[in-house]
Image 1 (cartoon, rainbow, N blue to C red):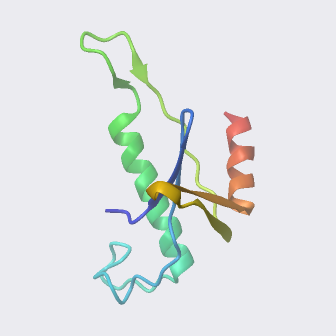
Image 2 (cartoon, helix red, strand yellow):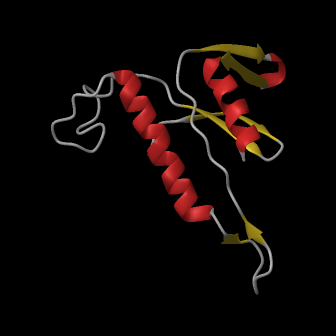
Length: 114
């Protein structure tokens, strides 16, 4: 629904990439507004934030055991900017993606603040 790509599961973290594609031609009301005129970078940020809000609403304080006692808590962060993407592997139908760039440094700073 938010057009993000899960790039990596690592420990208790999930990295999702929202590409800055020009969605105004492909999707009616790309940002939810009938007169959407946001540039691609802003649309990617809006989709990422909307996705985080939805995940937070659905899973923060999520009771993982019937009867209570154990709850899932979440910390979410959004980094914005250009990234480099590298596909690793490819043998035996298995590959991973590595991403690098300023948005990942932003997330590392945000993680230390929690």
